[in-house]
Image 1 (cartoon, rainbow, N blue to C red):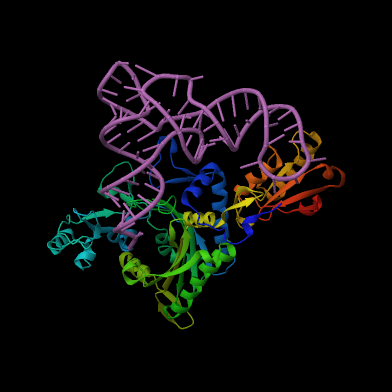
Image 2 (cartoon, rainbow, N blue to C red; image 1 turned 90 degrees about the vertical axis):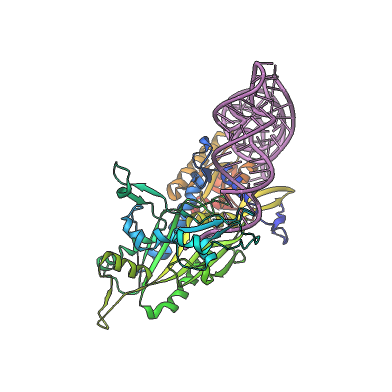
Amino acid sequence: MSVSAYTSGMSKEVKMEDIVSLCKRRGFVFQASEIYGGLAGFWDYGPLGVELVNKIKAEWWKAIVTERDNVFGVDGAIIQNPKLWEASGHVAGFTDPLVDCKSCGARHRADHLADTDSTDLEELKGLLKDKKCPTCGKRELTEPRTYNMMMKTWIGPIENDDSIAYLRPETAGSIFVNYKNVQETMRAKLPFGIAQIGKAFRNEISPRDFIFRVRELEQMEMQYFIKPSMQDEIYEEWRSFAWSFLIDRLGIDKENLQWHEHEENERAHYAATAHDVYFKFPQGFKELWGTHNRTDFDLASHQKASGKDLEYFDQENNEKVLPNVIESSVGVGRMFLAVMTDAYTEEEINGDKRVVLKLKPELAPYRCAVSPLLKNKPELVAKAREVYDLMKKKHGNVMWDDNGNIGKRYRRQDEIGTPECIVIDFDTLEDDTVTIRDRDTTNQKRVKIDEII
RNA sequence: GCGGGUGUCUUAUAGUGGUUAAUAUGCUAGCCUUCCAAGCUGGAAACGAGAGUUCGAUUCUCUCCACCCGCACCA
């Protein structure tokens, strides 16, 4: 048996349509409310998708919270006091004034065009009066319009201006406003971090690229509170954490990763410096994981807006300090898409094409599949059931598969990334050994049942 | 949001102003099968939504929705 894909030169570009089709066909991702025609920017995870997502999240949580003694987890409410988002700059920052060119259709940031920090529409209108479209050079710009990117709802039965609330546009908010609570209850000393995994909502103008740019997203992020003098050193530590987590903990090929440093004009309003890890998604290298120096922007803003003292008292030096914050933030959906893209492989086996998800075994939705070699031999099926029950008891996520012939089952498991297939044959009945077939090499080995349970 | 394209079983495709809407694959019931999608016999399963034209629309027209590709946007 030969697996020719292991010869070089086979690695071709992964197409988004292949990923989308596999995700649908095998129960990883479905369109949200599909039977009603879907909803742009919203996706549901299916039975296999949720397993993979949960494993990614668990791995991240382990690496960032459980394995450390100075990073603590929280799980904040999605809806917070609207004052939080005013103080954080999101109510203002989310309201970008934009102009369209009626001639060529290009859209531009009104404040950028006018070279101002103002977001006042009347003022911008004046400033932009004689401006030409930078794309086509014609004077055909519309009046500036704003697009509020935060999703709104209302609290209580009455819908009016006083009841407006926002779905959080990022999870960080509830970390900053809980920073004192966590510091005191955990008796934490600088530096320490607060981590959170949770949903956030953004009214993106145009959701794109499958689950890459969506309106409801899940973030994994950690805010690390430090003495300002430590910022450069600690910033680098978290940058390298992101890089090595992707390679060592998720098994992503470093050829698919690269660094991207934000230029001044593309930084978020809160960030002093920002580095993203880019991943080679089907549509090209795009942002996956950001490390930002948020300085004391957030704590200073909340301190001012709330009137509460958010300084940290440093007992050693007998001084009060407002911590700086280094943020490490990544989207779960993008991480999922990166893992799927990285793992997706097409290769030739005995002249046929096979699709195999070369997931890190710890991340695979199913740890293994158990099969009787033949379905119509009751003694094989009974024995296989025994082994299946034992494996299921030990590992939980084990799949039973007795459909079709053995080759079919192997291919089916390849496509969902199951690392090993355990097959019960006639020798098993004699000596209690089984064959274990490896997903990546297709090699088999014979082992005692006792050794695997 | 602008421009282009596409919507037919899970998936990939075919096709038609009046059809039992086809093929492959997957799924499924059974037979068969001693390790890489073999074969046989059955079965379930589709025209994105809404209007309009028409005796009759999956097919033509319009609107909407969704997805894909460019552009813009991505705080």
